Image (cartoon, rainbow, N blue to C red; front, side):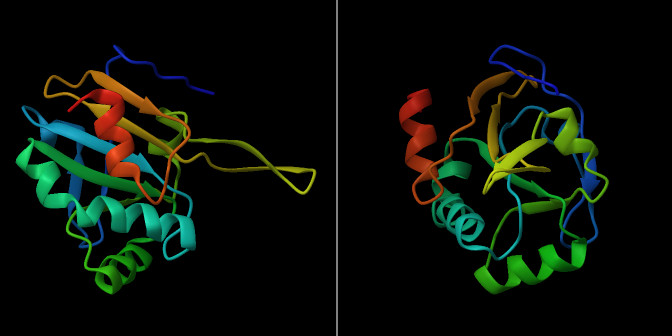
Length: 154
């Protein structure tokens, strides 16, 4: 499994958002990016995380950041999820899990003593030159914005 660290160049990604539009890392050149990976649309933890980032979206854009969420859900699922909660940012459908794998966000999980493959909730903060400046493996879904701000002193 891929492990990315602060100082690494962010892997290129390209996918389709909830509106059927292409979204890629190169499209954010010159801007900072919060790229977060989550397991499933419209589940409690994923909804809390998305809504926390969305509620603070104006603050993020004011600081020069864009926000992009990635999960293996479909474009249709993302469209419904974004519409239900008024999400202002891109959600990429990564049904093939290529972006998840490139960022080390697809791997072995354990529940009730059983192992299975699934999405590892992670967030990467990427600077305007495509360099990773923050990695969050333990995400506070209810207060992720403050978690990022405090850790990176932004």
